[in-house]
Length: 292
Image (cartoon, rainbow, N blue to C red; front, side, top):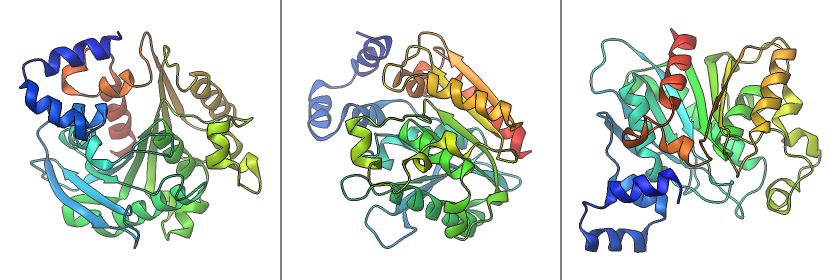
């Protein structure tokens, strides 16, 4: 059993067995974790705001409890292999970021098999457009937007940062994106596996599905982090993209966490497990530096 499973069991042990059983029956393991993990103090400022006309084109907004000035806006994109995921399961991440001084936009977006590449990127770009138009009402500064995500969400965030066509099509000035943070993302995955093929195989030019293809000077500063024990998304994805960005003269910071796996890197952003890796500190310090 991994350290995450062992510590998660200890976290849940004091809870009533009946309540846990009911939750586990209705939720994924991540849903159970999202239900019971301790959370940072922050406001859930808006729920199920529509950024499009499809059922999964909604978002939530989280904010610091106290603000004296407009804060940078963080759009967090969750992972799930472009096939699963829901924003409710990541509210604790949004609260962690909001407690560090960000207005956080947390969207759902359409997934396979309902859509394939690049529909989810277009959804994410529309969510960013919503942030530009509406974040000011929640104390955000729409000229200081940062993108971040985990796994498939890291791919989405990095693609929006590297290929400005999606943001431009949504009516967003790419200069509003001050920085991007990718957590354990796939950035260079040709040839496609069968799982990837069903999501990306319809693309007319398969090379344009790869973040590595769009590396160039002038992209937003990027932080790429991974766990060296990640058995889901090979850490080489982070190494290769970071090296390409450096070679192009693009600003990039690269962090590797020893002994940390694909799910553990996200768990390390939660209050119970932050002593395992400095993921949250590294991300928020980077994003703050790039938006101050």
